Image (cartoon, rainbow, N blue to C red):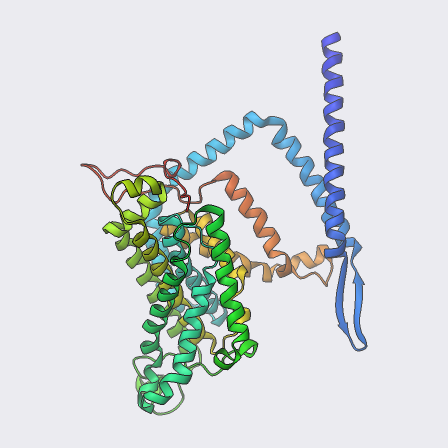
Length: 462
């Protein structure tokens, strides 16, 4: 009887502690949500008005309270069972990894036939183009972060350099030196130049950070990205400052432009003119560039420079002891990653037809880095899957109109997509802390090529 009473008292104390923790968490949520969700300024004829949405604040706070309570009941009170479930989930993910080749073939097939599906419209093509652009950026950054182990928080700088290089070359340089008929080839002539200029800036960044590692390297690369953005904003004579560069030439189909005239694409091939023809062509251009990036990076991994990157990621001191020139290894990683970022930037400029510094903020670097980390450092197929999930997931929030019935007609789901997706990333990191794809195929093997677990691969200290 005494033991039963003691257990009852202990359970009562646990219930009280759980309720106290849930109330404390909901109060913190209330303090955060009250100014963010409860108060909203809107434009009015006489100026700004302040709308109050305390009902939405109450719903959000209640979600935090009951969510915290559910965590206590389902997970934290049964830590041993939760650990077993997490282990089982990890084993399930490991069993699914042999299907990676089939997933890659399925994704490639879907990407090729997407424009010809009956349900495909311009919105889907634009979304596919955006996903492929970030996929290409992820594969470029994967060289620096995933293979060489160098944490780069300023990758958007190379994206911006490629975009502005193409814009300036195609709008200011080519019209002065090229005949009129060659202007249709402006994109194909300026694309490699933009990539090379971005690679040069990668070398410029690489030299000052050769001796930096870890957090110091991250801070310097972050500063480099901000420096590039500030320069683009203030160098008005060259970049037109915050007004941006308009009138960037569109790419052509081997010199044939997508116009209505007799020399246009549709008339040349006997087709009826449609504006979506240029959208489809742009989609296939970025698909080709992304596939080239994937093929090039996969080949580099099998070359001595790729193995040197992986050795640098595992242990820089041991890398030096083996006689590997770490200076050249780091510089080539920065240059190669920057080159593919420049290619993606050039495509972004020609697709938009207009660029400005507001398109190259730190959040772009953070998003690309999240794609690489979530997919799995060093895994190209993981980066591809992560790009589809993250970019497609962002766009999915634009269509969640049923949430307006819960939070009110003024609720905009797209404003909270970063919050929801951050929570989803936390769950993924708990389930798969080393990314979606953790298996690593060795570039050199003895007798048998056997994949190793990602737990045995270092994350890199660069």
